[in-house]
Amino acid sequence: MAFEDSSTTVEVRGQRARLVDVGSGDPVVVLHGWGGRIESMAPVVHCLAGGGRVVALDLPGFGESPAPVEAWGTADYASFVRDALASVGVDRADFVAHSFGAKTSIYLAATGDVVRKLVLAGSSGLRRPPSVRARLRRGVSRMGRIAGRLGPPGRALREALYRRIASEDYRNAGPLRPTFVKVVNEDLSDLLPKVRVPTLLVWGTEDDAVPVAHARIMEKAIPDAGLVLFEGAGHFAYLDEADRFCRIVRHFLRPPATP
Image (tube, rainbow, N blue to C red; front, side, top):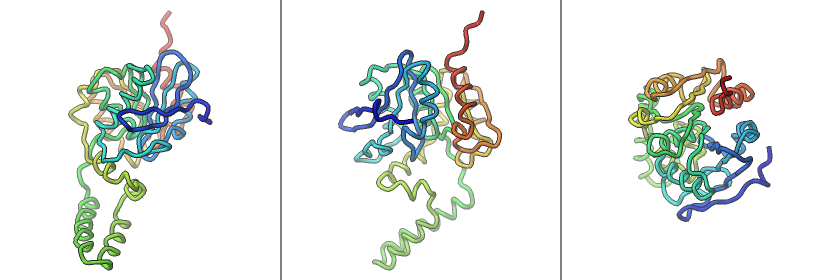
């Protein structure tokens, strides 16, 4: 799905972002995950645009939106999204979001009234207890920092160590690495009970980025939440079963009227 004709640029406090605004009626905001862009959510935008207004963003640092000049946390992204939506006349909307976009949406729902209904697909937001592998990575990371003080050979060793132990998202983050580290280490557990809007959780049973156990924690902690599992799907369950995701989300957001 091409968005060239419907995309524009919004600017909030000096930070620019690409925004797509299609359809008319009650607004739905669509947010992509870490490393994504508007096109990552194209099937969702296409599905929802027939029944209302859909607003999607390239979050700052992704797609065609320039990166923030300093490290942002989830609160910074949430504030930007809220103000960007207000700039196009959206003060309250349903949200359909994936991964980091879903984490941002949780923050918005827990700290204000911009969210009407919430769909979270493979949402990040909870920290995992450090595994043996993670503890090993920390040890190697400390070694890398020490090696970096030993001149060019040490710095070369440090980079080799970091390439070996870093996650793919971290390796690909480029100038967003400080932001990546910041948001990964933020735990939104305390905010979940403050999400007082109807919430639908959609998860792939084979999600290896955010385990299903996190979905079950969120389902229990969010007062009005339900969980739908896509058997065999991964972290991008909304793409693995796009038609099914579309049907479920449309029914959740706009349930048919009872006779």
